[in-house]
Amino acid sequence: MTLVELLAKDDTDIGAIARHLDALDAQTREREALGLDRAQQMRLWDLSASAPRLRLSHFVPDAVAPGTAVHHPGRNTIPPFRRFQDFEKRFTKQGKPGEVVGYNESAAWFIRPGYFVAYETDAPGVEPERQTRWAERGGVVIDYHLVPEAGSPLPEGWPAVVPNSYGLQRLVYHRTRDFMRRVSEHVSIGRASTGEGEADRMLDFWFVLVRR
Image (cartoon, rainbow, N blue to C red; front, top):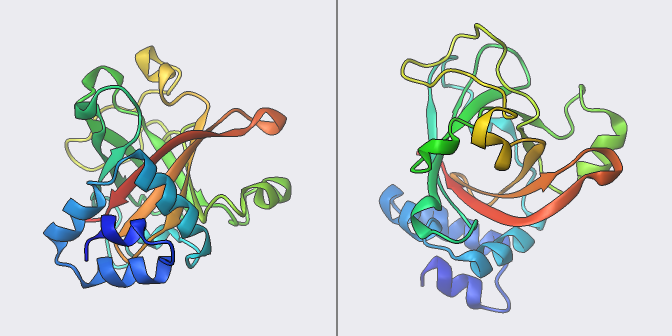
């Protein structure tokens, strides 16, 4: 049975999906997870609400040294061009407890790099009101309101850091956040949001990531 077939079953739960994905070899797992279309990703997002809470160590495992890049190939559901739905989020630790940083690598070179800071939605530094509002959205937030500090050490070959209010990045990343849920040991599912405070709202854009 494939991931697509599992998602089509009415009685599927996130535990069955996790067991299926964890049993696959890395190449097959990546192919199946990144083969999901918009409707399948929506279904996976809904099912993942009952998954164990996602932690930052999913994106950069504890054993990985600061400054090492960890790649998460992904597929998003932003229309209309299929070739722009394939991308990677690349993460690294910088030694600051409770957060990792990263950027988006994709064929859409004209809107790169899309830097972000990621942290857990129940982290001590997150305001109680936000923790309450964000609790059901996911365990980790990828926050495009924030970018790595100027002069921060980044992995070799990473692009220069620019704010997401700059250039065409503003159309995709400015004032947005991605909320992440666990699917399996290597796979996560995200959903975008925009705005702040009372204007903060979830968007109908989802994406799957697979840690290599």
